[in-house]
Length: 355
Image (cartoon, rainbow, N blue to C red):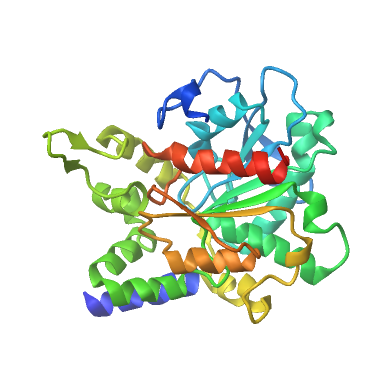
């Protein structure tokens, strides 16, 4: 098993770039009666047919739109259940996007790998499409990007590419804010995977087979460990804590994971294009002075992205200290979803809107 694990690790490492509580009640899902538009659009820069889920507040608002970007094995759907209703209720137009290679945004017949530059191109196409998605009144409103896990390194690479190619608008002229949640760090997941291997062979094995062999799609235990906080546990009063994710939820999510992992990130290509290749000696991005307000969030119970990786992402964005919330990796889906949502909301109000 150890030799088998090392073979898988070589693939995973080179790979992985890989509220108000009074309103809803702490950690209860918000009222999900918002008007949702779930459709495919044609991205103007590459003719890719991409899934976009959007919703706007019922009352007119001058707040910037929030763009939600998911991680590996997920799709736009993961933001729709709790985060989008929460932020629409707070007056923010919301857009959730499915990356190329998911069921909502097919990569094409027979395509099994997607380049990170493909993702950068798709993100640009999405940004160009915001007025047609939400309405022309949003053409001049700089959106807030919220990226989770693999989506986080896609955003870093997008910013890195714009800087390397020169010209055009600076990041703070494009975005009102950038929030990174449990993100793959700019150097990829290789280092954190090796840290996990040194800490626990069992944990490294579960992460590796979970992602490389896609066991998160079929093995409920590995799926729970990687995304949702682990196996349900019996509490002192004999009740069972399943982290707010029932066995039925896990089975439902696994059908989504299977659908949304048809084409995966080309990790060999990624290893040649990591955003960390252009950082300064302090680990900061070369364009850090031109960034809008940035937030970096980690999860205290994250099985995949460890504290060292979160700190690396914070340095990249010039953030002094990341915020760690009580949550597993999927900060948007378990019972603890509102912990990160509240942090995000407070940061938007204080740092982006300047209240």
